[in-house]
Image 1 (cartoon, helix red, strand yellow):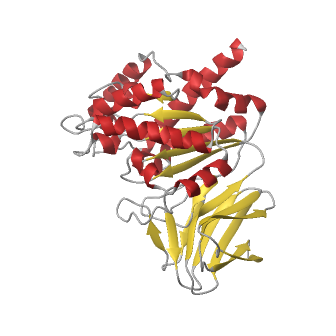
Image 2 (cartoon, one colour):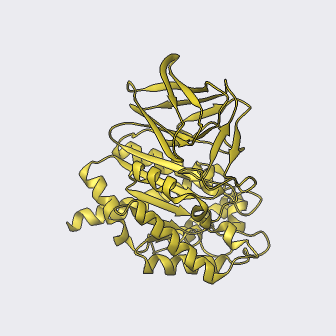
Length: 370
């Protein structure tokens, strides 16, 4: 039965003739690849993104072809259950508090990913294992902010303060190429809020996942725009992926009018921060155990509509799974989980490879036409 389900799905997927819609919106991303520039891909999304499964498939394929740019931005510590990156590993001591999740919203000052960890206690640590040639630390600069000491591979790299006017703070360091053990330790009893680390190489591709379990796209509009814009601008993405829609489709409070307005506002905010970046919107998967989620078709239709009007590329995930109702076959095939919403690791890897292949197909066609 599993084999039959897989063959049915593969046949339906192969029959889909529509690829990435509005491919002209990806021109600046392709120009960065053509120029051999460092290419940063930032993916904002919900739990599908937070798992890092399908983003990692894109990451591995892109880095194999265009070079390993390192992990790029990684959230500080282990901010919530279920957070992971396959290309970096972080932990933190117990007295850090996480804000920015759907359970603990916190204030708007949450940084690039919308998630932060903070403490008022001395002697608290945050560690990261990652490979790269340079390091930046993103944090909240705030009046009375505490001091931190950085250790690189067991050697002190000195201390810095997070004290200052409220806003985004950054500290930069040069690393020797290769893997590193990085650690931050608070030095006094004063407030410290960390957003994350940036570890990268001078060339190659980074695929940086910024997912929040349970999030809807409009969470981006809740974040302090000055802080978020500063950090997004610093990352200088060639491609921003927006991968939301599942939680909107399942919300009884969702309205089409507000959703249209929110998507336009989010796209405007991205373009104010990084005007040259291409934007790719990815719709939600087919999902729902007994019937589709409440607003699933409407969400997909509005995403397609807004993408077309705002010069944003669009990829219909449900269509490329095999169309409405196909999730039942995906569960039987072992490619979707029993919640009829999330994929299995194998299913996500298939998705990531498919997205990368379709991006590459357009890039190759574009190169042939030049």
